Image (tube, rainbow, N blue to C red; front, top):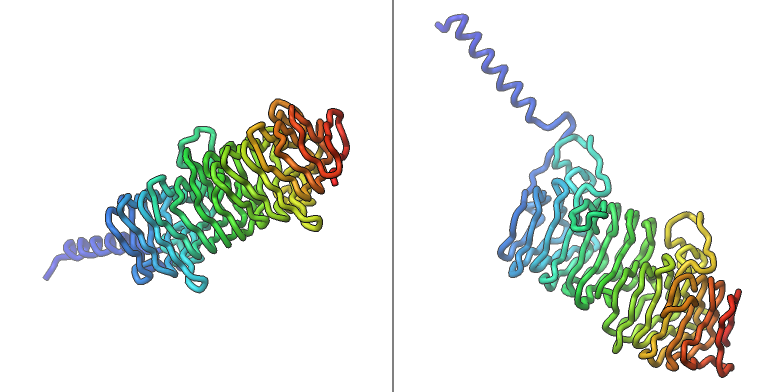
Amino acid sequence: MPSLKTYSRYIIHGLTWLILLISIAPVSGGNTPPYSAWSGVIKKDTEWTVENGPYLIEGDLKIKKKAVLTIQPGNVIKAGGKITIFVEGSLQALGTKEAPIIFTLKRDDTVGGDINGDGGDSKPSAGDWSGIVFIKSSHNSQLSHVSVLYGGAYRGPHRWASNSPAVEVQTSGLEIDNGHFAHNLGIAIQANSKSTITPIVRSSTFLDNKGAAVRLYGYSLAASLHDNTMTGNAINGVVLGKGVLESDSVWSPKNTYVISDKIQIAEGAILLLPPGTVVKGLNKKSVIIVKATLITDGEKSLPVIFTSIKDDNYGGDTNGDQLETTPSAGDWGGIGYSSSSTNNLLLNTLVRYGGGGKNLGRLASVVTASDGLSLRGTVIEHSGSAGLYRKDSTPFVRGVDLVVTTAIPDQIIFS
């Protein structure tokens, strides 16, 4: 018969195991579902099925050049920390309206269950993970009915930055449709390249992002953006940073475009702005330099608008300040037509609050050094300096042989 000492040892041993089991069990109310954990490198074609989901990415994930990651509709992908998905190859995430694919974070219990087992004690917040980067080599990537939520954690390389885009694009090989980008810490989608790229983003919504909905700079200005909806973001528009447009492009009147620095329409390229397109200048450095062709094809009832970001009369409250700021003369730079530009047309176009920064070396809302500019049904008003400045050129103004403005006007109307 075991001694009392032996019984005591059994009891202590049993209590020790009971305490250990309690310490590793989910907290009261937690219900941790099964999930698949991933990190590291995907070197070959891989498919993530709904049956094996949700998927928890525990560290940075890289899809190699020759690999394709296919994600089935209805899947939930959760980030376990401030991680990044790098796409060198191809990402095929084709959800449906009924079964979207969602990229979010581990602490988001609204989709994919409580996989961190805290009983819903933790809540998601902007910047809890970083996002998705489509490297220059990536190709044939498609995102359809995909949500990217709570991204934007800083991943470098800019020392001045405190956050990163939730989706970063360095390639033409990306097409996004019916996407949903919300609650991200910085810019939702940013494209940048040292050579021309033309990614596609259409029929997507951008909501409550603490940066701009979309930012293009470098040689990404020809990106195709159509039928997108932008509300509640720091900037409800497509921000165009310092860059060059090298290929023909048509801007969508469904987007508001915000010029934040000098952009150039390179020789050989044509930029067409359909009726109702709104372009806003962010600051005095905001200048459009036309070295080829700019056509604004406005209508009397639906003109093309160039104005200040503070002007909520056109394009809505783009800077999201709830009408706290009002526009003033000279808020932004203007439009400059270099001597090489040809076949330019300002048709039924309104240019407001420009003339605040140097434009082809002059202060004016519109500066032309080209004879290849026609103005018809155009209004230039509230300029901080000259409205129209002729620089060794003879622009055609309907009904007037020549107009040269050197005084500060309140309004100039060409009709």
